[in-house]
Amino acid sequence: MVSFTHHDAGTPEADWARSGVASLPELPLDAAELAATAFIVLAAHPDDESLGAGGLMARLHGLGAEVRVLLCTAGEASHPGSPSTTPDELSALRLREFAGALGQLVPAADWRYLGLPDGQLAGHREQILAAIGDAVAATGRPAERIVLVAPYRHDGHTDHDALGAAAAEAAAAAGYGLLEYPVWYWLWAGPGHPAWQPWQRLPLTPAEEQAKAQAMAAHTSQVRALSDRPGDEVLLPPAFLEHFSRPWETFAWQAPAPHAGAGPGYAAADAEGLFDAVHARDEDPWDYTTSWYEHRKRALTLAALPARSFTAGLEIGCSIGTLSVDLAERCGSFLAVDASSAALAHATRRLAHLPAARTRHLTVPQDWPEGAFDLIVVSEVGYYLAPEELAALFDRVETALLPGGTLALCHWRHPIDGWELDGDTVHAAARRQLRWADAGLYRERDFVLEILRAPEPLP
Image (cartoon, helix red, strand yellow):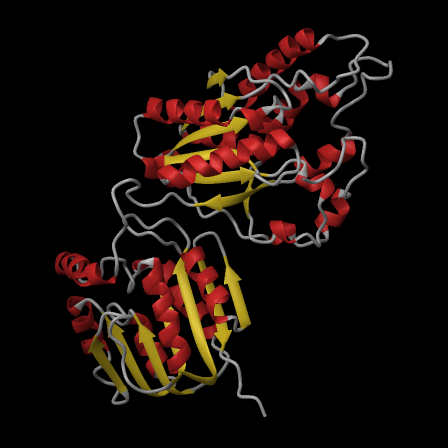
């Protein structure tokens, strides 16, 4: 357990500003996805919700998303030595402040006070899990349309850690999404602490920033002294509140599991039937040939490749071949493979004018072409595999890629209905398994593009 008190000066916000936290990738949830999801916001104490997720809550209210709030304690132990206010009086005061803060973020919010003792949430795990279950049931939504918003499970405060751990347990068991918001972490940790580096940002609009500031100010007993007597000091001084005046909020994000409780998602063996059916209805179902987003993403992918030309290229999951044409023109030989025979027929026609280009109907990783390559491209396909299949794919890549060769990965960062993985998970798995040098990384809200280089042989 981290040891700190609110009296500690902690890490200045200026240090965090220099750390690169402002460059974290955006949370991959667009307005439509947020609006279609029910959010259960958990707070250990009044003010946690405003500090860690006030901007998010204002965003959700503006989009018409369903928001339910669970407040575990009244924060009655915040001033244990107060000469002016008893714990019962402080409890009533803080609950009124909480209601006022919610009025700034989610007017007429559906919220429930659990009445658990401040500082003792670790001993009330079952009550917390039951309350989460009740709140989820009240939404009437499937698990993949539920996101829990909870304190970061390693925030350093005993109640935050206990509540965050309970939320993580509930999310993992049922397949809910999970957004963890840090609060005290910004005080005791510093830029050298590694936990924040995989987190993601939610940029806030000016209106959302204002709503959050007003909600934070509503917690008067925490941002102002109860009196000028010892024991009634300010709990959240201006230097600490600077961490929550950023034009974004920061979360650790875990996407919902597909079809939670109904067995695993789709796997590679399902791809041919699923995508043949899609292409039977529409020759270009994802608008590869007409969408500016797709044109721009292809241009970025091609520009990121570290060499002008390659000896032998392999594209996994070529679909109808729009990227394949540009890749083949830069390769002495080029092979494009796909599990969908319907998509591959379009790719074959698109590549017919390039004598060095071939196509093959293969379902990877179970099937794999012979030969060695100095370029392998895995674009928008990794999340169409089960986790164990993805690991097998990277085993195949590691064997087939020549020393010093290039692996290009590019994936959509939003949840993929019916599949267990998403783009961020695919890229994290590649880095973790291959441990290759990162030769380039570009990431925005919708997709992530990454170049990895296979190691050169030792001299």
